[in-house]
Length: 578
Image 1 (cartoon, one colour):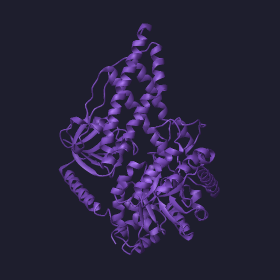
Image 2 (tube, rainbow, N blue to C red; image 1 turned 90 degrees about the horizontal axis):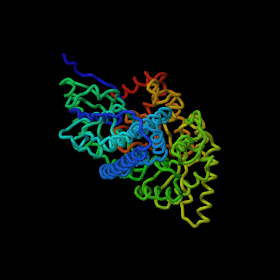
Image 3 (cartoon, rainbow, N blue to C red; image 1 turned 30 degrees about the vertical axis):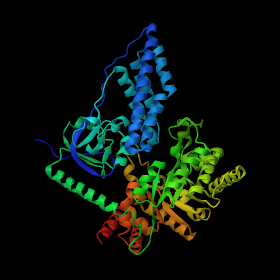
Image 4 (tube, rainbow, N blue to C red; image 1 turned 180 degrees about the horizontal axis):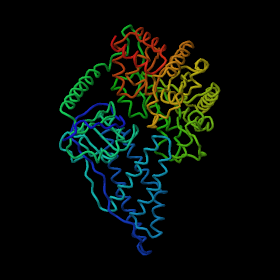
């Protein structure tokens, strides 16, 4: 008897639900073996390698152009990462060394890449760990070209489908017929994987990290993707399908209703207006922010300028990047977070030599890195200052843990201003400077910090992680990571109250700010600015416009009396039905 509703749990990578037929994008199966070659064959094997690399380069360039057309320059950078791997002389030289030792080229490529991929498993950072899959994808392309193989692509789609694959590459997604893709499901990947980024960009539901899913489904099988809960349901019953189809219709209706809120203010029923900003990584995302109704950029992650390159960004490059965003967002504020990279990442990127650290998460990173290498920091500050002439830019220092760090950073900022005056380059002298509160020590002394800056912004991702001593990407303890803990709520209240007592505004740019489940809580705490992924803005705005600030404050008063997370849940449920 056929079993219905086989529920599999994965990682929710892109919100939404979809019911559809499986389009199984099967993995390449290459047939080759290790063989020894004679000295007279070495040159011809190296030539085969060079030809395969060149053909792969042409394919990747084509993929980049297609990605640019479909999703814009931000997503085309994914293909740039693959091109950088292909051009890496270290990898090429290792393969050639293997060939010179008498190994055939196919085995040499396989062995070098297999050894390199093991090192990625040792990296703590999720973003960089995901780059292992980029390396493996490039290697597969080279091997396919060496062997003269072709691969089934998403251009073969002929009906509405849910794509199921071990992994999806830029080459896979640029060939797809977008209007026929209802969802993505992959075996590997996290929230920063290529699949997640593309799915979010297209607003298509996706669940990733489902091990062996390609062995559990068949071509044409009906499945359900729940990107809200991170679920995939195999062989769903008619009743389950009907329930999800209703949810899909509600989803579409809600999306249309939310679109109507775009130009309306985020104001409570009793007249309290808050700022709704977007978190972005580059200028290409400004269009999406404005499209979804953002009236600020609450977080510009400037560290993405340092990725996919081999040299540090120059002052001029910083200036060009920030001035473009400033112009596009006028008359709204743009908060630029200064470099939030650790020395470990800087070294892995090959930008400079930095000593290896045992615990980089608590090591030389963010403002600590900037203060140790002031010339790198100053180049960025000068770029921001020059760009401030073209819009309403603000500077924000990350990972502040003590007042002296703010004072030292401001000294470098003053040096940057003096140099610009000497160079005859214009800038706004009164540019606002703020800090991120994401370390418990900063939260505890937020009253002292508020006296030193123009504004505060709470980075809940790290603040919760450090306060709770929980690694949020560790599957064994991730369930302990929650904003709804008495300690977190008290810290948030302390930070916001401290800022307001000093006459300063306080925002939030962590994931909590974009989660509608916490919107009323944050309103009740007195948060002035919410900054989030652009697609979340309408959802949060809708909630803000349906409640009074006083009612939100009453909720928070009750939550602050709770001892446990279970009590929190009870209070939240009661409020929901009041």
